[in-house]
Length: 117
Image 1 (cartoon, rainbow, N blue to C red):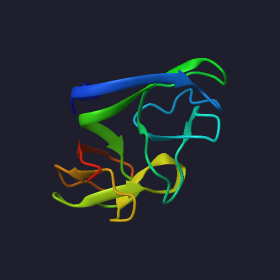
Image 2 (cartoon, rainbow, N blue to C red):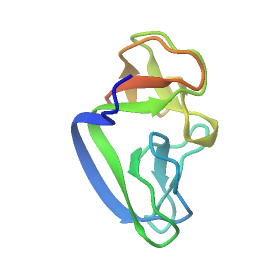
Image 3 (cartoon, rainbow, N blue to C red):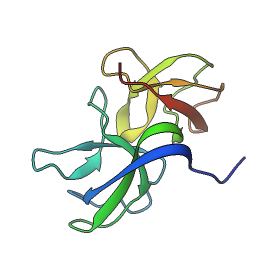
Image 4 (cartoon, one colour):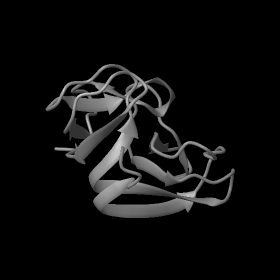
């Protein structure tokens, strides 16, 4: 597996509303203060955590392009994905944020092309 976390991607940095240490490659959302926190099932995704920091320190997320994220269930290629429990990616069309580019089992890293249309 490649160690590259994102290719041709956009990034954003904001304070962490909760500790995101060790949560790289998981999904983030913005809380009511605009800070990054771990996304939950059905949340609108702000991006994929690229560099997670402790509370109040600035974390970086990937906000577009091609990136990698932890799958919360088995996924096939070409499936729309949305936020699942614990910041993972699951199949879904409600608040979907991208389309898978490979097939994986739960807990594996899936490549996703960002598409929030």
